[in-house]
Image (cartoon, rainbow, N blue to C red; front, side, top):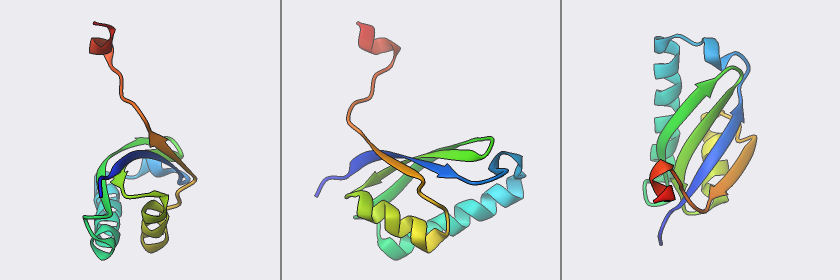
Length: 93
């Protein structure tokens, strides 16, 4: 089964004020949840921290795997959107 790409918007009050140690702890908590689910169903690519939100890029078999990760990690999946195409400046030709 191939994995689809998703962006997950998470509402986390004051996440943008966390220090490096606190962010490392959050990443460790997320990694532990990912291990419980298994790499064949979900992979974390990266996250962007901004104000009271994070925007996370994941590869997953389906939305269910993302919701399971949110449940296990305690990090909300406020909005889940499948990415259907990626464009960048080079797309213009």
